[in-house]
Amino acid sequence: MKTNTKFKALLAAVFAAMFALFMVACSNGSGSASSASASASSESASSESASASSAAAIENPVIRISTTTSVNDSGLLPYLQPYFEEATGYQWEITSAGTGAAIKKGETGDADALLVHAKASEEEFIESGYGVERIPFMYNFFVIVGPADDPAGIKDCATAAEAFAKIAESGQVFVSRGDDSGTNKKELQIWEAAGITPEGQDWYVNAGAGMGATLTQAAERQGYTLSDKGTFLANDANKTLTILLGESDDMKNTYSMIAISPDKWPDTNIDGANAFIEWMLGDEASELIANYGVAEYGEPLFYLLDASSSASAASASASASSASSAS
Image (cartoon, rainbow, N blue to C red; front, side, top):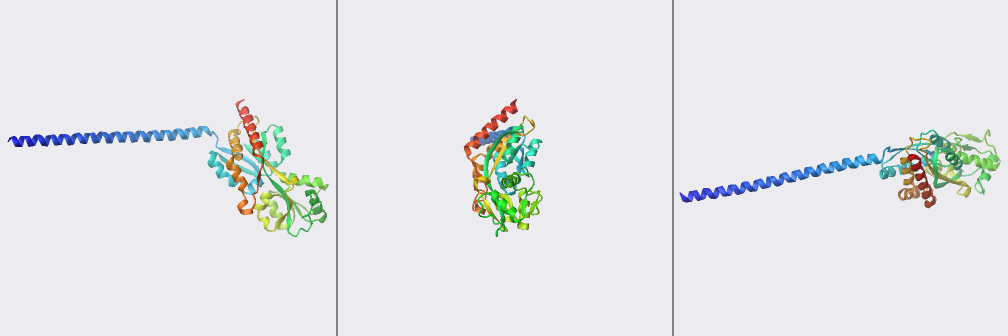
């Protein structure tokens, strides 16, 4: 009887110990679950906070860029776009036309930033109060292209004006953009330097189109035209036409960026415009621009201007636009 009583006592003690261990395990599991739940909640809150912070940092993510056809037709801007958008969180909304039409969008408040290449028109735009500052940052060259057999004999000319004079004298077809673009403005300057008025001549064709379409017409007619080098190399016209004159100092083609002034258009996305300019002058964009075209054409389609002067101009532009926004 005593043995039976001792056995029951021992069994009760074992059950008590097992129950105690079970309760401890449950308690720890509950604590872990609570901790995991709290951690997940914290991470979720942090993520939502980061998203809210990012959204607050970029009030308007869309940057309206009005640019000349050459940087678009050459493929440069489409090439840079995904890199820019990934690096900054902004998005480009690009419209391209001749420089005259591109600048007009800035005058009417339909752009946040310009990327164009007609110095006199750009300076007039700034002086009229539409832009913050002109920031030259890259260049390529204008070139005269034509048939490989060069019927007008311009290949050995010393200047573009001399080449234009020979084209006029020979009566060979010359296709003009005729669209008030930077390239068209340069062409008219060359005709003026040559002392020739080409309008109305049988051999002078006014395309009234962008660079790509003008090159196509010149190729179809086996005529001459003035092009920026980058667009020509990237265009199918290079299969039937060739560069006959270019890369002289008087044929340098400089591109500039301009942020639209918030004094003129208070709703302009000045933060986005400054982000665009800052990134384009940064290391990533500089490397991409310097290498663009090398693999396919054996040379870059665009060259960078002195980085320090461009950066100084960009800093001044950002400061000026910040002051305008604050006032």
